[in-house]
Amino acid sequence: MEKQIIPDDGLEVHLKDYGMVRMFHRDDDGNGIQFWATDILSMDEHTRKLLAGNVIKIKEYHLNLNNTAE
Image (tube, rainbow, N blue to C red; front, side):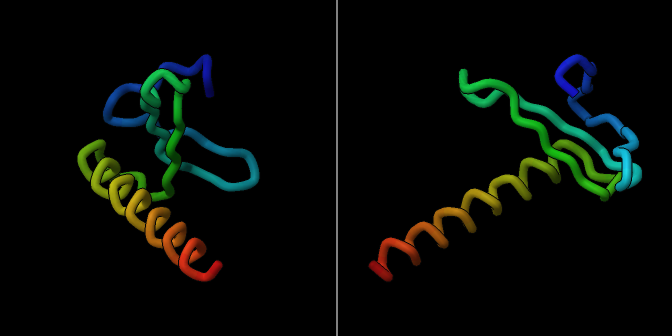
């Protein structure tokens, strides 16, 4: 995927043994490029950003649970 040009609104690609997905990418604040794939082919960049924000909140929640349990 690193050689593929992915527009800001995503790119539909076929993943072997899976099927069609929409790929997104973003620069990760100097840490390289992150890729995001979804089987929701109608997803746009705005929706992806909203969902990415939720993922961060879920990760923080689980991290806090683990720290509390120790």
